[in-house]
Length: 83
Figure (cartoon, rainbow, N blue to C red):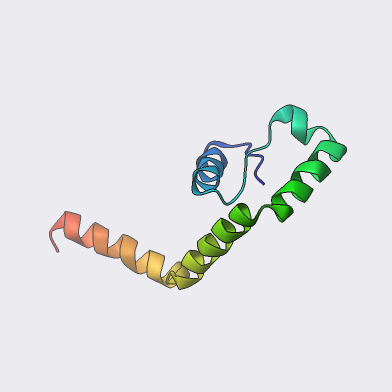
């Protein structure tokens, strides 16, 4: 479940929603503890959401982490500068 407040959070929330690994809360839903409880309960019971979340988790774990990200960024910078 996502309740994005900033631009990058909105992008992440949209992607989670697109992948079927969660959903985006509306302001009205986020303002109600009972509604949040209902949504969480429904999501936990939804096998499709669970499977998508597991798939997303496995993908994240297969990534190379911060060092891999830094190496990639540096390689892009080198290729654009002609080095």
